[in-house]
Amino acid sequence: MRCLLVALGLISLLSPAFAADYDLPDYDPPTLRGSQTFVPAFPTYPRWEGLYAGGQLSFSSAISDFSGASQPLVAFSLRNSTVLAQMSPDQWQVLGTTEPGAGGFGGFVGYNFQWDNAIIGLELNYTHASLNADAPSTPLTRNQVVGGLINSVTLTSSGSLHISDFATTRARFGWVIDHFMPYATIGLAFGRADMVLSTVVLDQLSDPNNLIPNPNPPPAIVAAPAGFFSFSQGQAKSGAYLYGFSGGGGLEVGLTQNIFARGEYEFIQWQRLWQIASSMHNLRLGLGVKF
Image (cartoon, rainbow, N blue to C red; front, top):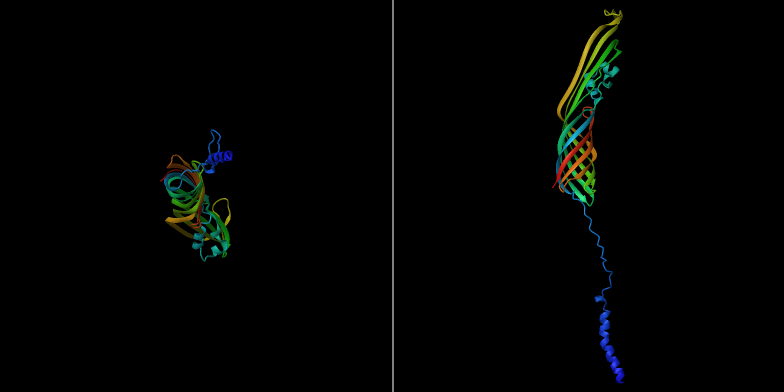
């Protein structure tokens, strides 16, 4: 009996020690020496969001098609005439296409919205240039019997288009790659231009029934002149407004945290004005500041 009491006493003393050794909240599992827990870093992106502005130099090339510009003037000059009805000189093309080029300068201001690497922005871009488009002209002469008389009709025309200022309001879509941001643009274009158009129609009438000798060698018999008529028409406008749409793309490079450089290409398609179809190709280099 005495031995049993001693054994129970020893068990009661050892039980708290065993319980403390196996207390799970206070138990630390063994770890390998030198190991560390991996914690992934939060991704960071270069800052392009916010307001920005800058200046730029540009080179612009315009394509101006005057082939249909003289036709409304000719039709108005010869309205209600037999010559217009039978010879259709209003459909003759005496003006052609020209492609002038010129340098320019300007500026831009805009705002970028950024989601991780993606950029969406709005920008106003302005350029001052001096693009002078003078239409090549090739006079045409055609002969036809109209009303019993030989009509020798000669059409001459001239035209010019001078674009001085233009701007685009455009949306930009970019993608940040470290310190680079390629982007695409689409928007509306506005401009100012000076235009001059003029036409002269000469109609010399001859009577085929009244033949006379030609005094100039070689000897010949020609129709006697029966009349001569001249019709002229012109129009001019200074500071006419141009409207159109634009599209392009470029690349911006971050030089410092707040300064960037850019190079871009932009295409502008203008609406027809006085039947003159015009478009532009613009190359630009710029330097800007992010605020």
